[in-house]
Length: 284
Figure 1 (cartoon, rainbow, N blue to C red):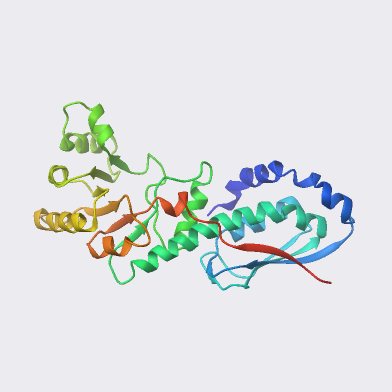
Figure 2 (cartoon, rainbow, N blue to C red; figure 1 turned 180 degrees about the vertical axis):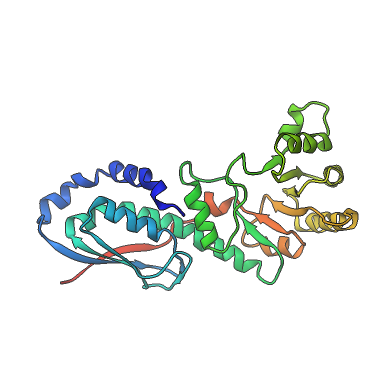
């Protein structure tokens, strides 16, 4: 990760919080007061965002010393130290909330992803994210998915083609094969995926020879039948099969056992709960 690319986001977070105008701290904490603090985990999980938090602290006040007690992608236990800070007390208090906001959001995604990855353990399936990310945070949130053991779907619209029903509708009478050929002609080398909703669409999509086929909103039983069909009809290398839609922690293992190669879960980034972290000022 090129953490310097997110300096604009760090500056925006500090400006949003008016971190240099904290009326409470300015009134109660002497400017010369020094302090030490620790960021602790309140639950078990996977940490993410420490280099960003480190950069935020030093960007706000170069006198702040930030020590990472673990690393992105590492598991922590309740009460475990995640990071330590030392320096001007007022600066520690100023960066506390923006710092925790970044860490809690990204660690929440990593922790939820790890739970999905654990749920499909023992199968060949891999857990993928989607483009359902917070605007401006996509690279960070997809990094958090990787820290949790997941995989990234396309980062943007240019990285991979995904032919959906709306594309076909706007093409008029054109079929899936024509759509695949046109995409490959326009963007040679770009992976092509086709979304299908039933077996009839699957058969048509398979005949077009895409790199991947996305099974949208199918049940595990339907996915199993689709995977068997793909394996039966494919000569040589077959397209990867991706299951998407309606997938939860409770049923993701069933989709994995059904034979899906890829399982994409929008909830990894759009519904991950914040990870429990707190900053505690240590006594002298």
